[in-house]
Length: 219
Image (cartoon, rainbow, N blue to C red; front, side):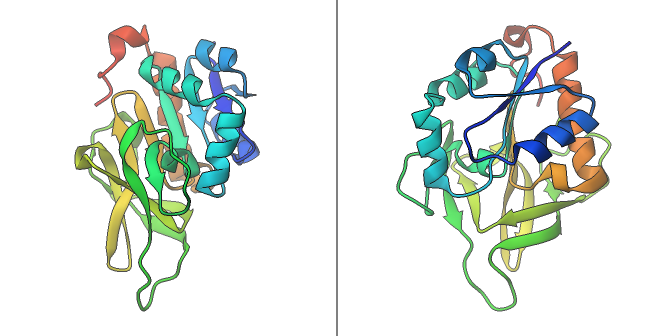
C-alpha cells in the first residue's frame, strides 16, 4: 500500500485534508518526522494561516530540507492553499523567506470597487495545463472553493496549471512542474470537483513507478 505523508507544522487543516484523501481512497499519515517524509510514496503540504508563522514553524521543526528533498526525489507532492504559497521565495504578507522551490513571490490582491478581500467562496478555474493528470475527469472551467487574500506570482508563467479571475485580476490558482503540484483553493472543501482532484492525485501515487524513472512524466 502506498503511503501519503501529510506534513504537520501546526498550520494545516489536517483533519479536512486527511478526510478528503481518505474519501479519494488513500490512507494518509500525519507526521512531522523527516524520516516519515523521506520514506513516504507521496507528500501533501496543507496550510491555513499566515506566511511568516508557517515558515517559522517549518524551520523550528527542521522540515525545510526534508520538504525540498521530497520534491527533488521525484515523488508526487501536493501543496494546498498556504502550502502553495510557502513554496515561493517571499510574500508581501511578511518578511520571512519562503522555501524558494518555485521562483517568484506571493502578492496581495489589489483593492478595487466591487470585489472583496479575502477572495472567498466558489469560483471557476481556467485550466492552463488542461491535459495535466490532476485535472482528469473535471468539467470545463470547474468551480472550486477559495479563501485567500494573497496569490502566487511565479517568474515562469509556464508552471501555472490553472488561473482564476477575481474582479479585474487574473491570477495563478495552481502550479504544476514535474512531480510538484500545488493549488491555492481547498480541494477538500470543493465538493465533487475537489474530491476528483484528490482522487487524481491518489491515482498518480498508486500508479507511479520508481520516481527516478517517472520524474518529468506527469506533464
